[in-house]
Length: 299
Image 1 (cartoon, rainbow, N blue to C red):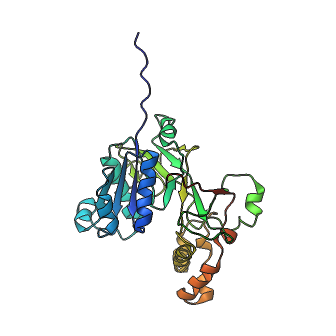
Image 2: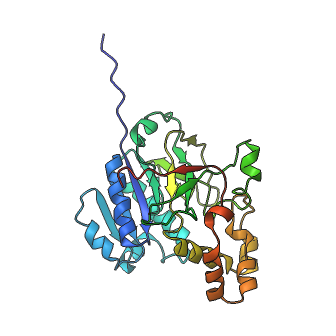
Image 3: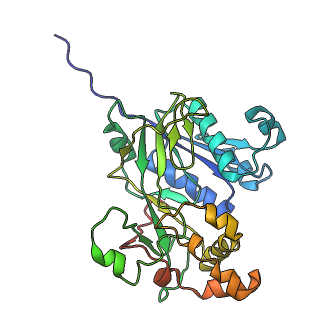
C-alpha cells in the first residue's frame, strides 16, 4: 500500500504596475523576496524609469517597460485610465508566470512582515480560484515626527464589525482616504481577467466574479502617501475632481476623499487647498478604526 504523498507547498509571486519613487519600489521588491516570493513581475508605466535598470539585475524580478512596443502587443492602444493598464498588465502576468498564485497590488502595498504566505495559500480549497487579502491603511501620529517613509501606525477598517466605539470615536467619521476593498491573490494560468480588486471569469460582456476565500492570516499594509505632504497632495487631487466625477463614485462608507470637494471649493485654488490639506491631521480626521503598530521586520 503506497503512502499518501505530502501536499506540495504552493509557490507565489506578485505583479504590480509601477509609478512610484525608486526607493519605495526597491523596498517593495526586497521586502517581498524576503517573505518568499518566487517571482515579482513589474510593469513600469514610465518606460524610462531608472528603477527598471536597477531591478533588471535581480533574477526574481521580471521587468517590463510599458513603451509603445509593449502596448502595440498588449492592447489595441495604451489605455488612458491607469486602472485599465493595471488590469491588462496583471492579466498578462498571471498567464505567463511560473508560480501557483499571483498577488496583484500596488508598490505602496506591503504584505505584513512575518506573514507565512505559503502556509495561508496551502489552506485555500481546491475549488477556490482566488483569495481576498484585506488591507490596512497607514497614518501618521501628530505627536511623532516621521523619520522614514515606513513610520506610523495602521488603521483597521470597521466594515463588518459590531464594535460601536469604532463607529463613534474620534477616529471613525471619514474612513480610509484610500481603498478598503482588499487585493486579489489568484490561481494562475486558469484564464481569469484580473481587475484592481477582484478577478473575473467569462466573456467580456458577461464576466462574473467567482467566490473568494478570505485571507485570515495575512494582510496588506497600504502606505497611502509616503509623507504627510504626499498624502495631502493625493487628497487634494481627488477632491479637485468635478462634482459630476465625484457623483459617479460608488457610495462606499469608507471613502473619505469622495466626501470632501469642499476642500477646493472653500480654498478656491489648488495651491491654497494643498496648504489646507497639509494642516489636516490624517490621524485625527481620517481614521477608520483601531490602530496597529507596523513592525518593519524585513523592510
